[in-house]
Image (cartoon, rainbow, N blue to C red; front, side, top):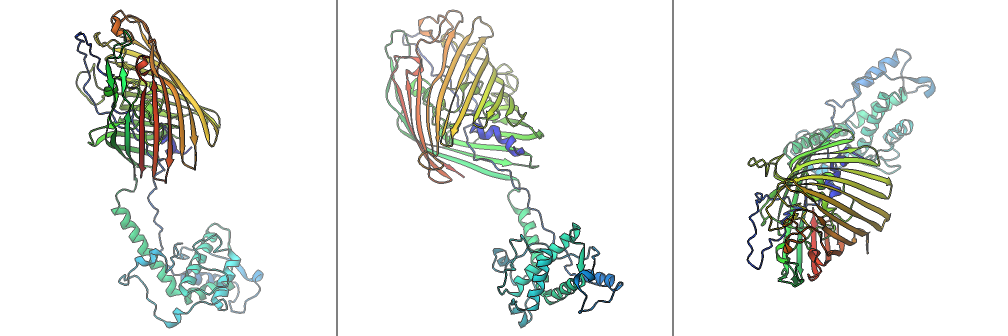
Length: 635
């Protein structure tokens, strides 16, 4: 696994760079008989980051390496020195002895400096960059230089001989020297230039220590004959280098990439009768949302300073809020909610770096929480391309605490075992009351996940989360998130939660899995505890209909209070009957189906249907039906 992949795992596999946005308290329950509910001590509202599912980050390109062209591209010094060396042993003439008898060790000198290996075809786009006004550009001064080099010419045969002896154009995809076809003098010079560079490289590597006087003569004669063209190639390279340096100095950033996601969505619900006070099973209210057309936009800047780090800056804006207040419960929430009233907010500001080759660290004031630090297991996670419901994104225990800023790590113990950990606070920036905010005050969360891959087709995540809440809200944003009766005074809670998620890739077109979660919350100033459970099973159908598409089916139970043993008057499940101890009598069932049609690389269309039976764990409530059509653009 690459270093950048290790840094990005928490972001990419989680399918977002922030926890579910705008985790509201459950709808305020008011008594119809005029009972005044006590005023709760609420936290100052903070703008929670909106969900984002950025494309897979690739490692930012390093600054393009400048190819240094030698200042002097003449080979005469080399030839002079070699001739002198050879002449000291025997006379040098055109009628030389056989090759085996006349080879001599080539003296490697710095003067053997052919031009850099960057051949430029006159028809290439780079060639058009050079205007006639460039003083460096050599001009054709002889009519004979316009002639093509024919396969019957001596130069053609000479270069062919060098190629056969030293393999000096083999593997060069940019070479123009092609068999027995006639080529222009400039194209021939390009191949000659490549061949000279290759011969020098072989000499440097001590793989071609000997060169014959016959070949030296050929090199000298070719260099003299094509001197003008070789100089022009070198000058063109110099111009390219200058332009490259200028582009690098003026571009926006050599280390930053921009990724974006824009969602347009249509959504609405049926009209339901709601039994808000479950005493006699008689509904008191009606719930419904109108058909709405909304948007959500996320921009992510990924900046690398060293190639082994990432600064993530996320901006978001949107106008789709939660439908909880309209349907009197939070079980119909959508995954792509982002209610900032279309004002741009920072939903992620975190820095990820490697402390060791297998240990990544993340620290940030926004976008650091279990959902973005732990490796995601659910293949249907993703606000823009996954399940349409918020419940279908991940195990709700990972949302406990609604953390935004903090520190985390990802330790890859082996290819099949890794460990992630995180500490996150809900309002780390607020310097006021330490009991309600700050890095170590208010609502905060600490957790860890052990991620296992026992086989190539099975992924497992085992989670533990501890959270302190200054009030009675679990802050999961879905299901039973309120821990005590709305008529009882609020109190602080400490919560321990455990869960596990499993995904099995049956084949390329089918994945099965599910999760389960359990939490136990104990009040700081009261006796007893509150316990919740949740579970889901899912089937993912990649490439359904065509490559890139995705179908999904999910069935599960949103978080439910199964046991509440607080003092009388404090228990939420029976709040309308005096708040006596006990758990929920009924159970909600979540059924979801969606189909993502990937129309092209940048655009997908996802219709989805969500049905909640016995909403709010109350059989007296009508089933809630939520329909949505999500259009996602990525760039």
